[in-house]
Length: 123
Image (tube, rainbow, N blue to C red):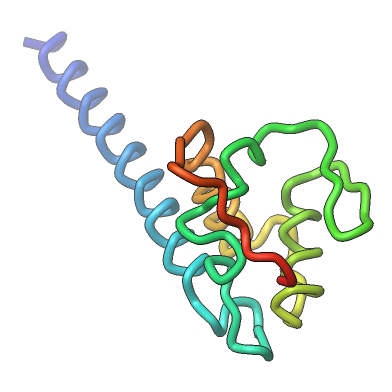
């Protein structure tokens, strides 16, 4: 009977952790598609340049990033370059919940295959 209780509690904790992780991806997707994300001043969202995450399939987990003339060592710093230059918004703190959510969403498109790699030029 005690083993059953421990197993039940363990399964409940796993379920809660999984639900929290999914919530982050869901919230990250909302932020990704929001034209007001990070104080965007030009009505663009991340999705404007990366429809459905196109161009980000290999972004998560890299040791180096090169974007818009900048060489960076983290995905968070890369997101902030896009926020600042493409969205004309305000960079986020690396440990903020918004940054964690957007990074979680970007990680969720890792390995996703698209029929075409359509990243909008000029973003």
